[in-house]
Length: 384
Image 1 (cartoon, rainbow, N blue to C red):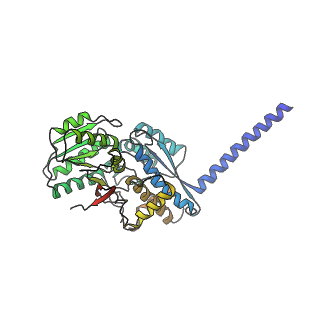
Image 2: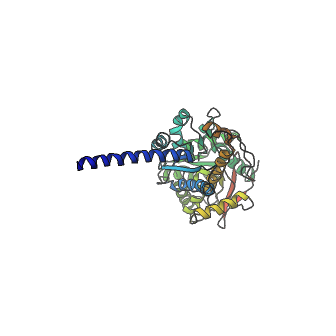
Image 3: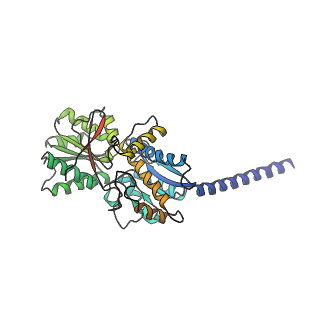
């Protein structure tokens, strides 16, 4: 009798627990808008992933603290992929099939994103603001993909055009990651040089998630380039610059593109920005003439008081702000179709003085150049 009682009691408890979980799940689905991402939170590119999450959650937390959007809170689920494509594949399946996210947001990396592109297209799930300038994501046939940043092609064209016109530089080399990301940068460099009847003087590669730059340096140093395009992660890129400065190059200009992560690169170089021209896809977060810069700085300090501003977290903050605006502008039911429509139709002034317009599958079609002096990033006026 006692055993039957405890058995019945146990069954009741289990059933009650199941019903509670089902109820909470329904409440969460109803009252929470779930976004999901896969990005590096460990390994050689971890700083970039961490900053993307901090930037997005800074603005999402700000919105949630004020009651959310029509009572709905925004939640960003994230998984570490260590910047390895196979891990990204596992993570996206979890986000879609287990977590049932409303939209994917802020995936980091070209090779990682390319690995899951078939799933993104097949599932037709919104894929918003991936942190990559890859050309394969800028396909107008992929209506569920909305890029925020300019492409690597646009960044590298801007770098080469600027140096060619302002400094009459004609001898370009490239240091790049030996994968899909590096290949994007390599092709963009070849095309930009071809427009000016130029060719690469040399090239050097390294393997993703390693610091093996010795062979690349050997291949480049004998050609005596005037500028070196850098398409890599921040640690191997910083290692390359250090060794290049030690052995061979005094006046060469190093030109890392945005994915290199300017802030992490400068930290690795102990604050030495000598002869480095940075390419970015957002304005400098040190430009206090922009209202959105002040908003970002204040909110980042409030929600992450120990973290310094960075280009990556600023970009992620801006994209989170656009996501919120798109949801708020949605008329009728909040579904994926309506959300995608509204994020593509956002007003030009949604980011204040930073004009946006959905064009070429991108919301922001501008690139920026900067240098690092006296502890700050200073904007460089680009020539056309």
